[in-house]
Amino acid sequence: MQGQDGERDRHGARNGGDRSPGTRGGAPDGASAGAAAGSPDAAPAGTAAEAPTGTPAKVATEVPVGTSAGAPAEVPDPEPRRGRPRSAAAERAILDAVTALLEAGEPLAGLSIERIARTAGVGKATIYRRWSDKEELFVDVVRDMEPDDPPVSGTEGLADLRVMLESLRTRGLAQRSSALLHNIFAQMKSHPKLWNEYHGTVIAPRRLAMVEAVRRAVAAGELRDDLDVELIDDLFVGPMLVRTVHRPDAPLPDDLADRIITALLQGLAPAARV
Image (cartoon, rainbow, N blue to C red):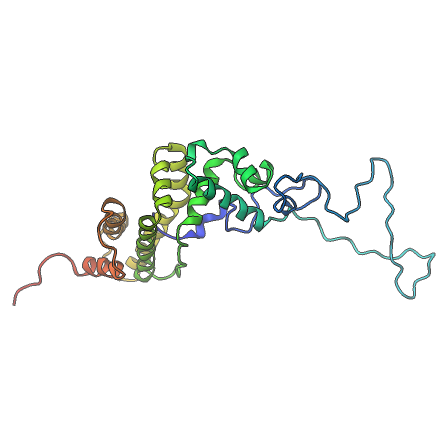
């Protein structure tokens, strides 16, 4: 699991952009977020009801100062309607609902969209507007529980590699300290569709970001240019993955990323004897 979280555009969580903008009943998504059993299509209080088909709606037009009542007032065109605005409260409620159900002992395989919607106090349509299926939702739940990936410059080589290695170390620490997160990862690996979704939208972008940082380091003369860049990436990431994944009892000291980089740059051969 390498890289940064800036690759998340295809998901709704933490993103601010809607996956499938649209309108339903003219009310924003957030209209149902605060009511556990409210209808998502109900018009908000104080809003005029839609006129029946064929009935002309009465529009009160204010006459500007200095304009005679008989002259038609110039009314500016309304701003074009945009898609249904996202509701941060509804999104937060959905993610928290999944986490609460998992903490209560519900297995991933046993969670249904209906149960999640009921727990979050939203309609199923609110969930499906953000996530196309449970796998996408569960991946965002995991990412929400993990530490945020720190930003990288995108122009540096070794400096960005160090930031991403440190991020991998902190995620390893998070999994060790959270029994729930550790349990979720164990369940994910037994569900191929869910694991493939996580790999494709989280692990693969992180790995790509690492490889690109290696290429920048090679171009800047910080690393050798006669080795395959993917091999170099594996040499950097491998020790951290061994410590965080394959050796859960191994120490993860604060300077581990620096020690890995220094060891690779200096090499493992003994110093030449004078």
